[in-house]
Image (cartoon, rainbow over all chains, first blue to last red; front, side, top):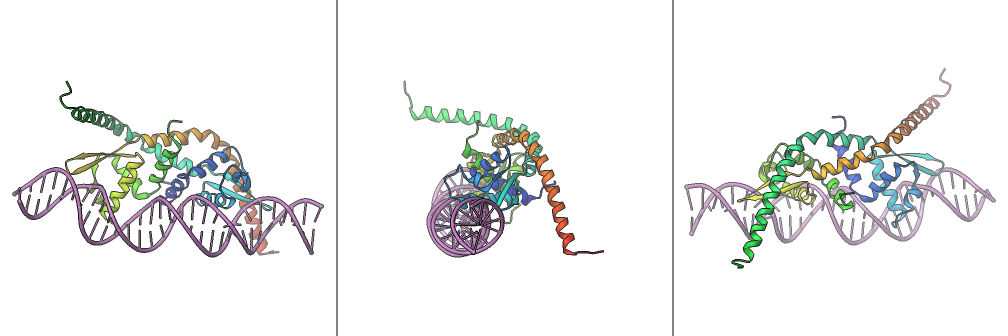
Amino acid sequence: MIQTETAFDATLAALADPTRRAIVQRLGGGDLRVTEIAKPYAMSLNAVSKHIRVLENARLIHRRRVGREHILSLDPRPLEALGRWIADQKPVWAARLQALDALLQAEDQAEDAVKTEEQPHAR
Amino acid sequence: MIQTETAFDATLAALADPTRRAIVQRLGGGDLRVTEIAKPYAMSLNAVSKHIRVLENARLIHRRRVGREHILSLDPRPLEALGRWIADQKPVWAARLQALDALLQAEDQAEDAVKTEEQPHAR
DNA sequence: GCAATATTCAACCATTAGGTTGAATATGAG
DNA sequence: CTCATATTCAACCTAATGGTTGAATATTGC
């Protein structure tokens, strides 16, 4: 494992917020300043600044100061690490998916049985 | 997009906790009861029960009652959706990675320059 | 030097999260 | 029926999150 356990915590927690996910996605198109990032949002600039800080702490974005402007760029490496983690587990899931399918089908049948009982002797 | 925005929130938030990630991983090996899941942890059974509930709400696991036992199975589908989301963005990152590399290298040089200045006229 | 711009810091607030303990509920076993 | 087991519910605590507003800091342009 390259990524430490707690780095994953930070990556996932940072991505768990839709505003931050949108910022990450937008930075995929190129670098942006703080105010530019904040523009589409109803929330205060300060709130966006905090989101940026969270992403920065999670190492998902990188800040470079140019004069009074702070320019943010996407750092895809934690995302790649996360992608690898998920891909690594894929083989295991194959079996689980099959088992789950069978399970859910059986449950649906059981539910139907209950519903039928709710109108007993309907004939 | 298949997965709704808020479903991603739930998936990512659920996975952001190391205990829950471990549970997910363990369930990859096969179904387990609540007490079995709780066994390795120092925390109370109740705490684990809450974690399980979070995973269940995120649809990452599925609960089936068998008598007094609750049997949990992994549902890999949200994980797969997450994997797809990450994979989808990969092309975009390629460019970012290159840009970032150049950036970080430039910064390191700048840092070195500062350090050299700290010992001026060292010769 | 001074005003405008870009951004953060600080304090505050409400909600959520992760944990605890103790009691309740449901099932199983003798 | 009664006791033990499996699990959740309820109330509580503390710390973290996501937001606000107002002030501070740094840089630029005139």
